[in-house]
Image 1 (cartoon, rainbow, N blue to C red):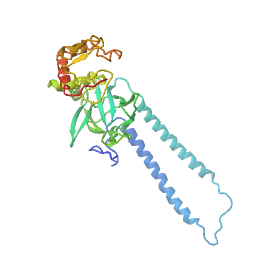
Image 2: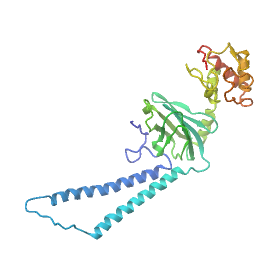
Image 3: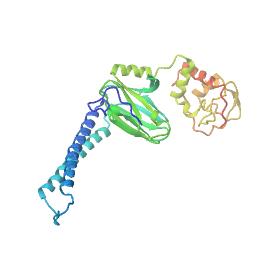
Image 4: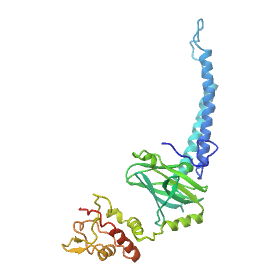
Length: 337
């Protein structure tokens, strides 16, 4: 996979710009290990070449049969590398613990990975927007600068891995459990997000952006994230997902059945209830089902886990928008359980 680096780079061309509190420690340790390797590798190779030439087999030459021994030299090449290895381990362990210990008072964001995209949901229930990046519209995670951020991550399908090169932060996103990651963005700007665990055909296209903004801009982004579209149909689509309706009532997916009845192709028709009666699938039925789900359970779903009531949680205009969206499914083929 070819990583597209951020516009600004660190002094080392292969590093993207460091933009989190972790970057200095990671970069400094990497640089130190690199120079340690160079300072050991170059003299060793030179000496190895010299010894190969100086002690090569040649006519009349006879080496000593005794094993040579130099105690000070052996102590030196044992103690110094050991001390360096212990120091590298210590620095690495301290850096890892800093990344693992999540501080209190963080800005929490839920991250969902799925083939092949990222979805972000903020503390106030708002969801990430999309921005035009080049020719592609990508999901953008907006975060405040100089604030500790905690990501609560899960996968809807297979193993993924969330990676922000500029933050020097990476963590696997595992199906069936939550994983956590934190960092503190220290620079304003837009940075790359990648999946670094092969997850299928379009793995290389599973990219997004993180946009680090001022606190005021972040608060504006939060307010915008929970805005509902003016268009009733678009608003209904958004609410259908935001309120969790789509989790049980699959819509617009041919052949898909969920824990609850599908609304595809039901509008204006008579539907059978669990008590043996029939009722018109209209505005009144949808409204009652939202506010008092157990009143008229659909046939075949009476034994399912009862749906929670949304009374007091949704406004009348939101119910109207949901009805508009469900009406739009009239032409879709009905789904049998």
